[in-house]
Image (cartoon, rainbow, N blue to C red):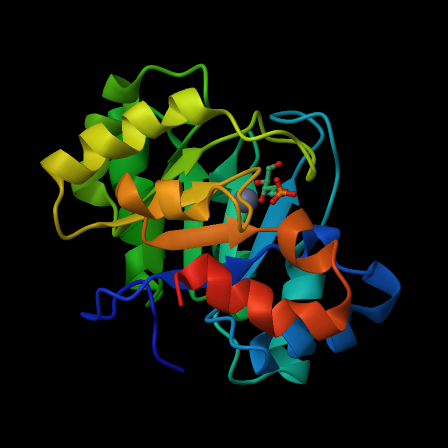
Length: 226
Ligand code: DX5
Ligand code: ZN
């Protein structure tokens, strides 16, 4: 399957986060949003240490890869030691791996990005709301995609933090061709502002899976901007 993060198309990439899917009906929900027009599935991996929650691991990724062979799987590692999980998620069929700038030195990020890319995946680097933008700017050359968190990570369903758009605006100005992902509290009501401030990879959990399945095709179209 083609990697939408590396696609030369400037069209927004819509990546519903399966964190808000029905875990007892994961194949149905994940397959449903892909048939409804989503470009990727976003997997929020939490270790109970970097963030105060536990979510999913490589086994779920592998099962999604088997059940949905054409799906692009975008793995967001909210973990203290991302180096432990690069190979397991690559073997499990991930297409992109994102790690957080808060947990790496420059040297560690260089090595991690090289490992991810060496496995044939694209590289994302993420930043939390309280972290100064300079921290991710110093690593931006290593990444195909910059993920600006618009909530403090840990749970879906939190309110969007509009002040984080200052980061996407600044990163977009500095990196006109890089993908910029926004994650947290994105809805059909605020997505046009999110896109206008430079984001072209849109993650949404509650806004997609919190609505009935019949509404999801329209929501995905609205998140993309028509
Ligand atoms: C932050 C996760 C997000 C989050 C999105 O904890 O990285 O992907 O679950 O959920 P919503 O869209 O409900 O804010
Ligand atoms: Zn995420």
